[in-house]
Image 1 (cartoon, helix red, strand yellow):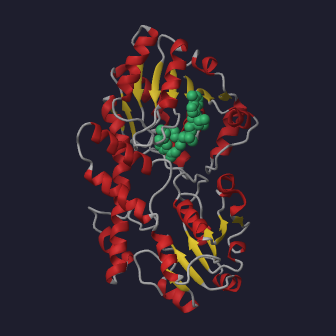
Image 2 (cartoon, helix red, strand yellow):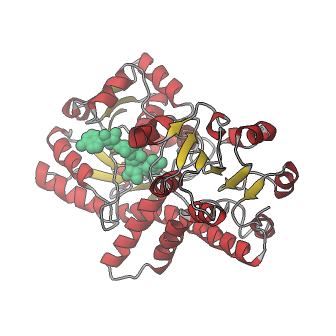
Image 3 (cartoon, helix red, strand yellow):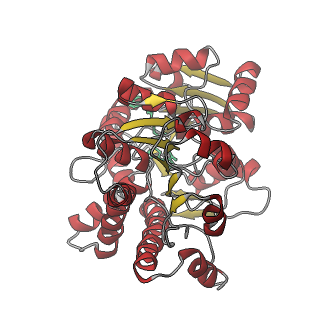
Length: 435
Ligand SMILES: NC(=O)c1ccc[n+]([C@@H]2O[C@H](COP(=O)([O-])OP(=O)(O)OC[C@H]3O[C@@H](n4cnc5c(N)ncnc54)[C@H](O)[C@@H]3O)[C@@H](O)[C@H]2O)c1
Protein backbone atom coordinates (compact mmCIF):
# COMPACT_ATOMS: atom_id res chain seq x y z
CA UNK A 1 0.00 0.00 0.00
CA UNK A 2 1.17 3.53 -0.66
CA UNK A 3 1.14 5.51 2.57
CA UNK A 4 1.87 9.15 3.42
CA UNK A 5 2.67 9.95 7.04
CA UNK A 6 2.37 13.65 7.84
CA UNK A 7 4.48 14.65 10.84
CA UNK A 8 7.78 12.85 11.30
CA UNK A 9 8.30 13.05 15.07
CA UNK A 10 8.61 10.11 17.47
CA UNK A 11 5.28 8.67 16.42
CA UNK A 12 5.28 9.52 12.71
CA UNK A 13 8.80 8.23 12.18
CA UNK A 14 8.19 4.98 14.05
CA UNK A 15 4.81 4.45 12.33
CA UNK A 16 6.17 5.17 8.85
CA UNK A 17 9.25 3.03 9.37
CA UNK A 18 7.35 0.02 10.72
CA UNK A 19 4.79 0.18 7.91
CA UNK A 20 7.66 0.35 5.40
CA UNK A 21 9.31 -2.62 7.08
CA UNK A 22 6.18 -4.70 6.55
CA UNK A 23 6.37 -4.08 2.79
CA UNK A 24 4.47 -0.83 2.21
CA UNK A 25 5.73 2.14 0.25
CA UNK A 26 5.87 4.98 2.78
CA UNK A 27 6.64 8.68 2.44
CA UNK A 28 7.16 10.62 5.66
CA UNK A 29 6.45 14.36 5.44
CA UNK A 30 7.44 17.15 7.80
CA UNK A 31 7.57 20.95 7.67
CA UNK A 32 10.87 20.89 9.54
CA UNK A 33 13.33 21.06 6.65
CA UNK A 34 16.35 20.35 8.82
CA UNK A 35 14.74 17.19 10.18
CA UNK A 36 13.90 15.94 6.70
CA UNK A 37 17.36 16.82 5.35
CA UNK A 38 18.94 14.90 8.25
CA UNK A 39 16.71 11.88 7.61
CA UNK A 40 17.57 11.99 3.91
CA UNK A 41 21.24 11.83 4.92
CA UNK A 42 20.45 8.82 7.11
CA UNK A 43 20.68 10.72 10.42
CA UNK A 44 17.93 9.96 12.93
CA UNK A 45 16.75 13.04 14.83
CA UNK A 46 15.66 11.19 17.98
CA UNK A 47 17.15 8.45 20.14
CA UNK A 48 14.96 5.37 20.04
CA UNK A 49 16.53 1.90 20.38
CA UNK A 50 16.46 -0.03 17.09
CA UNK A 51 14.97 2.82 15.05
CA UNK A 52 18.10 3.91 13.24
CA UNK A 53 18.84 0.46 11.76
CA UNK A 54 15.25 0.05 10.64
CA UNK A 55 15.08 3.49 8.99
CA UNK A 56 18.36 2.96 7.14
CA UNK A 57 17.41 -0.52 5.95
CA UNK A 58 14.01 0.52 4.59
CA UNK A 59 15.32 3.75 3.07
CA UNK A 60 18.07 1.74 1.32
CA UNK A 61 15.56 -0.73 -0.12
CA UNK A 62 13.58 2.27 -1.42
CA UNK A 63 10.41 1.68 0.61
CA UNK A 64 10.83 4.66 2.97
CA UNK A 65 11.15 8.22 1.74
CA UNK A 66 11.40 11.61 3.45
CA UNK A 67 10.16 14.88 2.01
CA UNK A 68 8.79 18.33 2.77
CA UNK A 69 6.70 18.14 -0.42
CA UNK A 70 3.26 17.33 0.99
CA UNK A 71 1.31 17.24 -2.31
CA UNK A 72 3.81 14.81 -3.87
CA UNK A 73 3.43 12.47 -0.89
CA UNK A 74 -0.37 12.66 -0.65
CA UNK A 75 -1.28 12.38 -4.35
CA UNK A 76 -0.38 8.69 -4.80
CA UNK A 77 -1.32 7.62 -1.25
CA UNK A 78 -4.16 5.27 -0.38
CA UNK A 79 -3.63 5.96 3.32
CA UNK A 80 -2.79 9.43 4.63
CA UNK A 81 -1.69 9.21 8.25
CA UNK A 82 -1.80 12.36 10.40
CA UNK A 83 0.90 12.21 13.08
CA UNK A 84 1.62 15.85 13.89
CA UNK A 85 1.97 17.06 17.48
CA UNK A 86 -1.07 18.01 19.56
CA UNK A 87 0.57 19.93 22.41
CA UNK A 88 -1.32 21.48 25.32
CA UNK A 89 -2.82 24.98 25.00
CA UNK A 90 -2.79 27.45 27.89
CA UNK A 91 -6.06 26.06 29.30
CA UNK A 92 -4.91 22.42 29.08
CA UNK A 93 -7.01 21.53 26.03
CA UNK A 94 -5.21 20.00 23.02
CA UNK A 95 -3.84 22.53 20.53
CA UNK A 96 -4.94 21.20 17.15
CA UNK A 97 -3.56 24.03 15.01
CA UNK A 98 -0.91 21.84 13.31
CA UNK A 99 -3.52 19.18 12.61
CA UNK A 100 -5.95 21.64 11.02
CA UNK A 101 -3.21 23.12 8.88
CA UNK A 102 -2.48 19.64 7.56
CA UNK A 103 -6.16 18.88 6.92
CA UNK A 104 -6.42 22.04 4.80
CA UNK A 105 -3.24 21.21 2.87
CA UNK A 106 -4.02 17.59 2.07
CA UNK A 107 -7.61 18.18 0.86
CA UNK A 108 -6.83 19.17 -2.76
CA UNK A 109 -4.49 16.21 -3.23
CA UNK A 110 -6.49 13.27 -1.87
CA UNK A 111 -7.36 10.54 -4.39
CA UNK A 112 -10.95 9.27 -4.63
CA UNK A 113 -10.24 6.18 -2.55
CA UNK A 114 -7.87 7.84 -0.05
CA UNK A 115 -8.41 7.12 3.63
CA UNK A 116 -7.27 9.77 6.10
CA UNK A 117 -6.18 8.25 9.42
CA UNK A 118 -5.50 10.20 12.62
CA UNK A 119 -2.60 8.73 14.55
CA UNK A 120 -2.13 11.90 16.63
CA UNK A 121 -3.86 11.88 20.01
CA UNK A 122 -6.89 14.13 19.48
CA UNK A 123 -9.96 14.98 21.58
CA UNK A 124 -13.18 13.11 21.00
CA UNK A 125 -15.11 14.69 18.13
CA UNK A 126 -12.01 15.61 16.10
CA UNK A 127 -12.52 12.77 13.64
CA UNK A 128 -16.05 13.94 12.88
CA UNK A 129 -14.85 17.53 12.58
CA UNK A 130 -12.13 16.47 10.09
CA UNK A 131 -14.71 14.44 8.15
CA UNK A 132 -16.99 17.50 7.95
CA UNK A 133 -14.20 19.85 6.94
CA UNK A 134 -12.92 17.51 4.21
CA UNK A 135 -16.47 17.24 2.84
CA UNK A 136 -16.58 21.05 2.59
CA UNK A 137 -13.15 21.23 1.01
CA UNK A 138 -13.47 18.35 -1.47
CA UNK A 139 -17.23 18.21 -2.09
CA UNK A 140 -17.24 14.44 -1.39
CA UNK A 141 -17.29 11.96 1.49
CA UNK A 142 -13.68 11.22 2.39
CA UNK A 143 -13.15 8.29 4.76
CA UNK A 144 -11.57 9.42 8.02
CA UNK A 145 -10.44 6.76 10.51
CA UNK A 146 -8.95 7.05 13.98
CA UNK A 147 -6.03 4.81 14.85
CA UNK A 148 -4.57 5.94 18.18
CA UNK A 149 -1.02 4.93 19.03
CA UNK A 150 -0.05 3.22 22.29
CA UNK A 151 3.71 2.89 21.81
CA UNK A 152 6.09 3.73 24.65
CA UNK A 153 9.15 5.82 23.88
CA UNK A 154 12.20 3.69 24.65
CA UNK A 155 10.43 0.54 23.43
CA UNK A 156 8.59 2.09 20.49
CA UNK A 157 9.64 -0.35 17.77
CA UNK A 158 8.77 -3.39 19.82
CA UNK A 159 5.46 -1.88 20.88
CA UNK A 160 4.57 -1.03 17.28
CA UNK A 161 5.68 -4.37 15.86
CA UNK A 162 4.03 -6.40 18.64
CA UNK A 163 1.15 -4.28 19.92
CA UNK A 164 -1.03 -5.50 22.81
CA UNK A 165 -3.95 -4.45 20.62
CA UNK A 166 -4.73 -2.25 17.65
CA UNK A 167 -7.67 0.13 17.94
CA UNK A 168 -9.38 1.65 14.92
CA UNK A 169 -12.39 3.91 14.81
CA UNK A 170 -14.26 3.82 11.49
CA UNK A 171 -17.60 4.79 9.93
CA UNK A 172 -17.64 2.01 7.31
CA UNK A 173 -16.60 -1.65 7.80
CA UNK A 174 -14.65 -1.53 4.48
CA UNK A 175 -12.27 0.99 6.03
CA UNK A 176 -11.79 -1.32 9.00
CA UNK A 177 -10.89 -4.13 6.57
CA UNK A 178 -8.23 -2.02 4.79
CA UNK A 179 -6.64 -1.14 8.13
CA UNK A 180 -6.83 -4.76 9.25
CA UNK A 181 -4.89 -5.78 6.16
CA UNK A 182 -2.31 -3.09 6.93
CA UNK A 183 -1.89 -4.32 10.51
CA UNK A 184 -2.08 -8.07 9.78
CA UNK A 185 1.74 -8.51 9.81
CA UNK A 186 1.85 -7.06 13.34
CA UNK A 187 -0.95 -9.19 14.75
CA UNK A 188 0.40 -12.67 14.08
CA UNK A 189 0.29 -13.54 17.78
CA UNK A 190 -3.50 -13.27 17.79
CA UNK A 191 -3.53 -9.90 19.47
CA UNK A 192 -6.90 -8.19 19.03
CA UNK A 193 -7.75 -5.76 16.24
CA UNK A 194 -10.54 -3.73 17.79
CA UNK A 195 -12.94 -1.91 15.49
CA UNK A 196 -15.18 0.73 17.04
CA UNK A 197 -16.63 4.16 16.38
CA UNK A 198 -14.22 7.07 15.86
CA UNK A 199 -15.44 8.62 19.12
CA UNK A 200 -14.68 5.48 21.14
CA UNK A 201 -11.26 5.13 19.50
CA UNK A 202 -10.38 8.75 20.28
CA UNK A 203 -11.47 8.32 23.88
CA UNK A 204 -9.68 4.98 24.30
CA UNK A 205 -6.29 6.63 23.91
CA UNK A 206 -6.98 9.31 26.52
CA UNK A 207 -8.62 6.89 28.93
CA UNK A 208 -5.62 4.54 28.74
CA UNK A 209 -3.16 7.34 29.50
CA UNK A 210 -5.38 8.78 32.21
CA UNK A 211 -5.60 5.44 34.00
CA UNK A 212 -1.85 4.83 33.81
CA UNK A 213 -1.23 8.35 35.15
CA UNK A 214 -3.75 7.69 37.92
CA UNK A 215 -1.80 4.63 39.05
CA UNK A 216 1.41 6.66 39.21
CA UNK A 217 -0.14 9.54 41.15
CA UNK A 218 -1.84 7.07 43.47
CA UNK A 219 1.36 5.24 44.38
CA UNK A 220 3.20 8.56 44.78
CA UNK A 221 0.59 9.78 47.22
CA UNK A 222 0.86 6.51 49.13
CA UNK A 223 4.67 6.82 49.12
CA UNK A 224 4.47 10.24 50.70
CA UNK A 225 2.13 8.83 53.31
CA UNK A 226 4.58 5.98 53.99
CA UNK A 227 7.34 8.48 54.62
CA UNK A 228 5.19 10.48 57.01
CA UNK A 229 4.12 7.48 59.10
CA UNK A 230 7.29 5.39 58.99
CA UNK A 231 6.21 2.78 56.42
CA UNK A 232 8.21 1.53 53.46
CA UNK A 233 6.50 1.90 50.08
CA UNK A 234 8.57 -0.97 48.63
CA UNK A 235 7.11 -3.36 51.17
CA UNK A 236 3.62 -1.95 50.63
CA UNK A 237 4.07 -2.26 46.86
CA UNK A 238 5.00 -5.91 47.22
CA UNK A 239 2.13 -6.36 49.60
CA UNK A 240 -0.41 -5.13 47.08
CA UNK A 241 1.21 -6.10 43.78
CA UNK A 242 0.94 -9.85 44.32
CA UNK A 243 -2.81 -9.43 44.46
CA UNK A 244 -3.76 -10.44 40.91
CA UNK A 245 -6.49 -7.78 40.88
CA UNK A 246 -3.83 -5.10 41.40
CA UNK A 247 -0.51 -6.20 39.87
CA UNK A 248 2.80 -4.32 39.79
CA UNK A 249 2.65 -2.33 36.55
CA UNK A 250 2.83 1.44 36.86
CA UNK A 251 2.98 1.29 40.64
CA UNK A 252 6.56 2.46 41.09
CA UNK A 253 6.85 5.57 43.23
CA UNK A 254 9.06 8.35 41.91
CA UNK A 255 9.40 12.00 41.08
CA UNK A 256 6.17 12.33 39.10
CA UNK A 257 5.35 11.44 35.52
CA UNK A 258 6.57 13.58 32.63
CA UNK A 259 6.93 13.15 28.90
CA UNK A 260 4.97 14.37 25.95
CA UNK A 261 1.82 12.35 26.68
CA UNK A 262 0.67 11.74 30.26
CA UNK A 263 0.64 15.34 31.54
CA UNK A 264 -0.97 16.78 28.43
CA UNK A 265 -3.43 13.94 27.89
CA UNK A 266 -4.72 14.02 31.48
CA UNK A 267 -5.30 17.78 31.17
CA UNK A 268 -6.83 17.52 27.70
CA UNK A 269 -9.28 14.82 28.83
CA UNK A 270 -10.21 16.99 31.81
CA UNK A 271 -10.79 19.90 29.42
CA UNK A 272 -13.11 17.74 27.30
CA UNK A 273 -15.08 16.77 30.43
CA UNK A 274 -15.39 20.41 31.54
CA UNK A 275 -16.66 21.43 28.10
CA UNK A 276 -19.49 18.91 28.71
CA UNK A 277 -20.12 20.26 32.24
CA UNK A 278 -18.68 17.17 33.86
CA UNK A 279 -16.32 17.97 36.74
CA UNK A 280 -13.25 15.72 36.20
CA UNK A 281 -12.49 15.20 39.91
CA UNK A 282 -10.17 12.23 39.56
CA UNK A 283 -8.27 13.68 36.60
CA UNK A 284 -7.79 16.96 38.45
CA UNK A 285 -6.45 15.14 41.52
CA UNK A 286 -4.11 13.03 39.37
CA UNK A 287 -2.68 16.18 37.77
CA UNK A 288 -2.43 18.07 41.09
CA UNK A 289 -0.67 15.18 42.83
CA UNK A 290 1.75 14.93 39.92
CA UNK A 291 2.58 18.64 39.89
CA UNK A 292 3.34 18.38 43.61
CA UNK A 293 5.37 15.20 43.20
CA UNK A 294 7.60 16.91 40.66
CA UNK A 295 8.64 19.25 43.51
CA UNK A 296 9.41 16.45 45.97
CA UNK A 297 13.15 16.31 45.29
CA UNK A 298 13.68 20.03 45.74
CA UNK A 299 11.73 19.90 49.03
CA UNK A 300 13.94 17.07 50.26
CA UNK A 301 17.09 18.94 49.26
CA UNK A 302 15.87 22.16 50.86
CA UNK A 303 15.03 20.35 54.10
CA UNK A 304 18.42 18.63 54.14
CA UNK A 305 20.58 21.68 53.48
CA UNK A 306 19.44 23.84 56.37
CA UNK A 307 21.89 26.61 55.41
CA UNK A 308 20.32 26.81 51.94
CA UNK A 309 21.29 25.60 48.50
CA UNK A 310 23.07 28.75 47.35
CA UNK A 311 26.63 27.86 46.41
CA UNK A 312 26.03 24.11 46.81
CA UNK A 313 27.07 21.81 43.98
CA UNK A 314 24.33 19.36 43.05
CA UNK A 315 24.93 16.48 40.64
CA UNK A 316 21.96 15.20 38.67
CA UNK A 317 21.87 11.74 37.08
CA UNK A 318 19.13 11.39 34.50
CA UNK A 319 17.48 14.18 32.53
CA UNK A 320 15.17 12.34 30.11
CA UNK A 321 11.64 11.87 31.39
CA UNK A 322 12.31 8.13 31.45
CA UNK A 323 15.14 5.74 30.47
CA UNK A 324 15.92 4.71 26.88
CA UNK A 325 14.77 8.00 25.35
CA UNK A 326 16.30 11.44 24.79
CA UNK A 327 12.89 13.10 25.22
CA UNK A 328 12.91 15.78 27.93
CA UNK A 329 9.38 17.14 27.45
CA UNK A 330 7.91 17.82 30.93
CA UNK A 331 10.78 15.85 32.49
CA UNK A 332 10.87 16.09 36.31
CA UNK A 333 14.63 16.73 36.12
CA UNK A 334 13.94 20.08 34.45
CA UNK A 335 11.62 21.14 37.28
CA UNK A 336 14.44 20.42 39.73
CA UNK A 337 17.04 22.20 37.59
CA UNK A 338 14.87 25.33 37.34
CA UNK A 339 14.46 25.49 41.11
CA UNK A 340 18.14 24.87 41.85
CA UNK A 341 19.16 27.59 39.40
CA UNK A 342 16.75 29.98 41.13
CA UNK A 343 18.31 29.10 44.48
CA UNK A 344 21.85 29.67 43.20
CA UNK A 345 23.23 26.11 43.15
CA UNK A 346 25.90 24.86 40.78
CA UNK A 347 24.50 21.96 38.73
CA UNK A 348 26.49 19.13 37.14
CA UNK A 349 24.40 16.81 35.00
CA UNK A 350 24.76 13.50 33.22
CA UNK A 351 22.35 11.60 31.02
CA UNK A 352 23.31 8.87 28.53
CA UNK A 353 21.16 10.32 25.72
CA UNK A 354 19.36 13.53 26.63
CA UNK A 355 22.24 15.96 27.23
CA UNK A 356 22.09 17.55 23.78
CA UNK A 357 18.41 18.38 24.21
CA UNK A 358 19.06 19.84 27.66
CA UNK A 359 22.02 21.83 26.39
CA UNK A 360 19.75 23.44 23.77
CA UNK A 361 17.53 24.76 26.59
CA UNK A 362 20.01 25.57 29.34
CA UNK A 363 23.27 26.28 27.49
CA UNK A 364 26.20 26.98 29.81
CA UNK A 365 24.10 27.44 32.93
CA UNK A 366 24.80 23.77 33.66
CA UNK A 367 27.95 21.64 33.56
CA UNK A 368 27.55 18.60 31.30
CA UNK A 369 29.54 15.58 32.46
CA UNK A 370 30.65 12.87 30.05
CA UNK A 371 30.22 10.10 32.63
CA UNK A 372 28.08 9.67 35.74
CA UNK A 373 31.20 9.78 37.93
CA UNK A 374 32.44 13.01 36.34
CA UNK A 375 29.18 14.68 37.36
CA UNK A 376 30.02 13.96 41.00
CA UNK A 377 33.27 15.90 41.28
CA UNK A 378 33.01 18.11 44.35
CA UNK A 379 29.25 17.55 44.65
CA UNK A 380 27.46 18.20 47.93
CA UNK A 381 24.72 15.81 46.84
CA UNK A 382 23.57 13.62 43.97
CA UNK A 383 19.94 13.68 42.78
CA UNK A 384 18.84 10.68 40.66
CA UNK A 385 15.93 11.64 38.42
CA UNK A 386 15.78 8.89 35.73
CA UNK A 387 16.27 5.16 36.28
CA UNK A 388 18.75 4.47 33.46
CA UNK A 389 20.10 0.95 33.98
CA UNK A 390 23.70 2.25 34.12
CA UNK A 391 22.82 3.97 37.42
CA UNK A 392 21.69 0.77 39.10
CA UNK A 393 25.07 -0.71 40.05
CA UNK A 394 27.55 2.15 40.25
CA UNK A 395 30.98 2.04 41.85
CA UNK A 396 29.95 3.41 45.23
CA UNK A 397 33.53 3.74 46.52
CA UNK A 398 34.50 5.83 43.50
CA UNK A 399 31.38 7.91 44.02
CA UNK A 400 32.34 8.66 47.60
CA UNK A 401 35.84 9.65 46.55
CA UNK A 402 34.49 12.11 43.96
CA UNK A 403 31.81 13.76 46.11
CA UNK A 404 32.39 16.43 48.72
CA UNK A 405 29.71 14.74 50.86
CA UNK A 406 28.38 11.21 50.25
CA UNK A 407 24.74 12.25 50.01
CA UNK A 408 22.21 10.75 47.57
CA UNK A 409 18.65 11.84 46.87
CA UNK A 410 17.27 8.93 44.89
CA UNK A 411 14.03 9.82 43.11
CA UNK A 412 13.74 6.30 41.66
CA UNK A 413 14.48 4.04 44.66
CA UNK A 414 17.36 2.31 42.89
CA UNK A 415 19.30 1.18 45.96
CA UNK A 416 18.73 -0.84 49.14
CA UNK A 417 18.56 1.07 52.42
CA UNK A 418 20.80 -1.41 54.27
CA UNK A 419 23.45 -1.25 51.56
CA UNK A 420 23.49 2.56 51.58
CA UNK A 421 23.73 2.63 55.34
CA UNK A 422 26.64 0.22 55.45
CA UNK A 423 28.45 2.13 52.70
CA UNK A 424 28.14 5.31 54.76
CA UNK A 425 25.93 7.32 52.44
CA UNK A 426 23.34 9.76 53.65
CA UNK A 427 20.53 8.34 51.53
CA UNK A 428 17.08 9.76 50.87
CA UNK A 429 14.57 8.03 48.61
CA UNK A 430 10.82 8.06 47.94
CA UNK A 431 8.40 6.58 50.45
CA UNK A 432 11.12 5.03 52.59
CA UNK A 433 13.01 6.11 55.70
CA UNK A 434 16.13 8.20 55.21
CA UNK A 435 19.35 6.53 56.37
N1 LIG B 1 5.55 10.46 21.78
C1 LIG B 1 4.81 9.45 22.19
O1 LIG B 1 5.24 8.60 22.95
C2 LIG B 1 3.38 9.31 21.70
C3 LIG B 1 2.72 8.09 21.89
C4 LIG B 1 1.42 7.96 21.42
C5 LIG B 1 0.80 9.03 20.81
N2 LIG B 1 1.45 10.22 20.66
C6 LIG B 1 0.76 11.31 19.97
O2 LIG B 1 1.24 11.37 18.63
C7 LIG B 1 1.28 12.73 18.18
C8 LIG B 1 2.68 13.08 17.75
O3 LIG B 1 3.53 12.99 18.86
P1 LIG B 1 5.12 13.04 18.73
O4 LIG B 1 5.69 12.74 20.06
O5 LIG B 1 5.55 12.22 17.55
O6 LIG B 1 5.32 14.60 18.39
P2 LIG B 1 6.63 15.33 17.83
O7 LIG B 1 6.55 16.71 18.33
O8 LIG B 1 7.83 14.49 18.12
O9 LIG B 1 6.42 15.31 16.24
C9 LIG B 1 5.47 16.06 15.55
C10 LIG B 1 6.05 16.39 14.19
O10 LIG B 1 5.03 17.02 13.40
C11 LIG B 1 5.66 17.99 12.59
N3 LIG B 1 4.69 18.97 12.06
C12 LIG B 1 4.07 19.97 12.72
N4 LIG B 1 3.26 20.65 11.88
C13 LIG B 1 3.36 20.05 10.68
C14 LIG B 1 2.78 20.29 9.39
N5 LIG B 1 1.93 21.29 9.21
N6 LIG B 1 3.12 19.48 8.37
C15 LIG B 1 3.99 18.47 8.56
N7 LIG B 1 4.59 18.20 9.74
C16 LIG B 1 4.27 18.98 10.77
C17 LIG B 1 6.70 18.60 13.52
O11 LIG B 1 7.70 19.31 12.81
C18 LIG B 1 7.22 17.36 14.22
O12 LIG B 1 8.33 16.79 13.55
C19 LIG B 1 0.76 13.56 19.35
O13 LIG B 1 -0.62 13.76 19.18
C20 LIG B 1 1.02 12.67 20.55
O14 LIG B 1 0.13 12.95 21.61
C21 LIG B 1 2.72 10.37 21.08
